Length: 110
Image 1: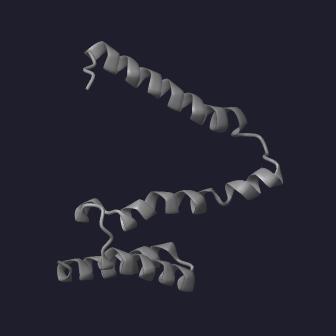
Image 2: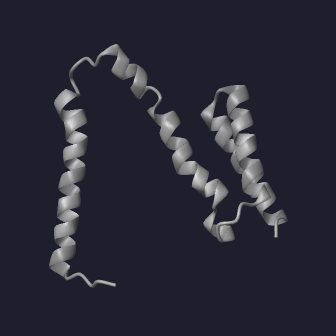
Image 3: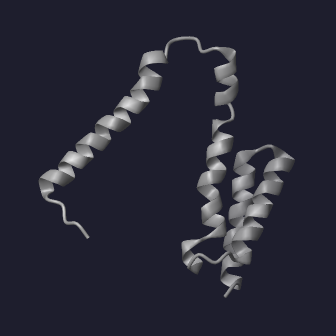
C-alpha cells in the first residue's frame, strides 16, 4: 500500500474539488438560465428513475450487515416499498411502508 504525504493528500483533495466544481458549473452555471430543448428536458426527467435503483439495489441484494448475503427482511421490505409506491404513487408512503416492514422484520430474522 502506498503512503501519501500530507501535501499529496491536499493536492488530491484540491484537484477533486476543482473537478467537481467544473462538472457542476458546466451544467448549472453555463446553461442554467437558458431554455433547454424539449428533448433534453424529456431525458432529464428520467434521471432520478435511473440513478436511484443503482444506489439502492446493492443495499438490498448485498447488504453489509449480512456480509453480502441477501436476506428475507430486506427483500420483502423492497417488495413492499415497490408495491406501495406503485399503488399510491407517493414516495413518502412507500418509504414509510418499507421502513416499517424492514424494522418490523429485522428483529425476527437470525
